[in-house]
Length: 455
Image 1 (cartoon, rainbow, N blue to C red):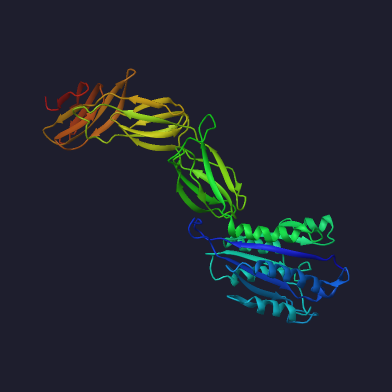
Image 2 (cartoon, rainbow, N blue to C red; image 1 turned 90 degrees about the horizontal axis):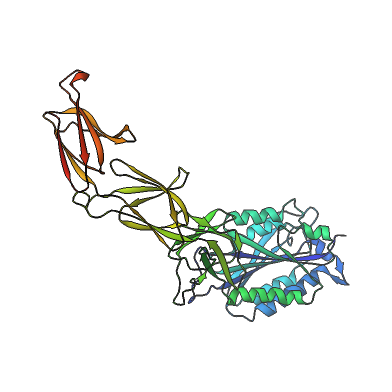
């Protein structure tokens, strides 16, 4: 004879939105009752079926006092006699509705041990008994047996989780060996039926899920481990499913503490703070009905890249590529004369002036602003009698480096950083390299230089 145990599973279906303070969710409880033939067996001079019914009545009488709850009944193993039984023998006997507890109790009272135990199938079907996910949806399964249809309750849990339905069971058992208890670790937490506090513990948990909101604050820590960083977008991911659930802008409240969020407590979360570069939390399982804290190291400082409003660059939208030092990945493209926040550390800058400016190992410190100043540009005006080909080179370290190509237009202008340059040009009509013209010139901030390629 198998060991006798009761399996009570709390299956909670959560909505995609966060709970609002002013509109708590309604609670729906689906009872899934085992009426398989194995329930005939005795336990302490009482049949398993009678023991299961008594336990069921206690739950109904206790939870039914709360008029804001709705109930439904699914039963399995109750229609097809075993042997052979039917592994699809699971049916929603009483759907959700008002004032239906008398009918639910009547159907359980009339139940006689008949068929087989299809636990996985019943768990999967139970997901269809709820019309929506806008309530706190709970499933309580009362059973005496191990899966008899070759199914796997753990697999059922995975199927439901893949649909966004979080399976969170409580297992109450009698006479189970440590090895048998271990087989249910993937399903939920084990409770001893003989423990007088087990019933009150489960009913209290259900009430807490209804009455107590799960709250959360995210502490973005500075380099002194103080939760002082803020004003950053945060994405909350359901870690197990790999999908995001919420986006919030981190805020400090009027007491300068991280703001409190109301979220569903059932997924395991990972929070990504979209700092530059982004940082993330470890996986975090929230405690139901309590205030939770997720801490993320996010110490930040500021980078300001600027130059004064010179004669030739006041309206120029020059950009700067920001990378971590010795890394090629682009973290940000920042406009000149703006300030951005970065995680503290060392950064390399590539400023997209003509020619480009490379500044390495710029250190960002906690709450400080790193000022990077570059000189104002000067203006080069190029005049030609006809279209041609050419380029501008800059002298650096006794070498010439390409800056940009000339177009075929006869009048061109360029904003160039101060320095010594060489201009190269040849008219298109002249088919010999010997006709190349070279002009040397110097650019100073806020000054104009004209180069004529016909003299």
